[in-house]
Image (cartoon, rainbow, N blue to C red; front, top):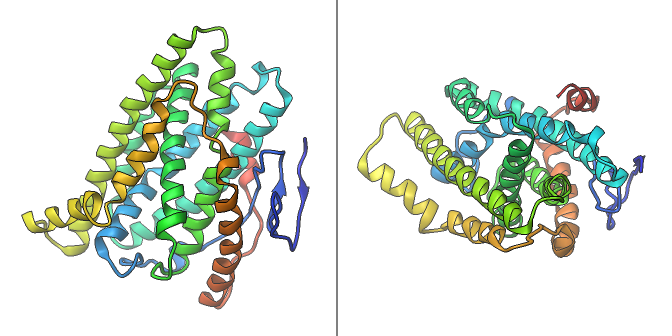
Length: 314
């Protein structure tokens, strides 16, 4: 099913920046947030540690999303399910826009004096495996992590203490991660449909376990590095504060881990429809956040997008 433009609506399946791709509600929103125009070293609730923990997640996103697009699009010509092919294409367009905006976000981190290139190269080395089946399973694993993280963000984190334009960008990204959360696992199930249930389960959770631990270690290392570079030093006390914020109070890592444990259930598939109320509320909140962001900037960047070319090139 091809998309059609939708304007001035914020109802189920439609959004005023949207292109409705299918009944799954994968919606293309071509928004620009201009993070690099307003680098902020303490944008999350005026709390340095919570800020760098989110920034440590952001650093991993551009190399990851380019990998995800390649992983799924290489299967397009091999799938007979036209609906699933359209889902992959909608997914790729959303992820291409995410890549563009997070490249800009990482430029803001560079402007704050961080060696983003070194950290990105580490993620790229970890994602060098391009084996077709494994790369889809890796994509499923990271999509599950971002799906769980996005639910936590939208339910607990997107409050008044989040500075613009970060608030609008993370709200947008989280909504779309929920919208396309099932695409990768639908592809995995389709390409392994001739496997036994036990083989498919062992493969899926085995890859997930490795990916989750790698992702968590990256996040901890990158966050601690950003904290040290912004504070100018590292002490035992500063490291303890970092881990307390992560695992104690507010302890968001534990919330994310709880969501990811669902992945170990046989036959698990993330279901965006179960988050329909959250998506409706968050889409409305995105309208408000973007309007607020427009006041933040005297001028907004143009809306021309290179996302389709980026997605096609992967």
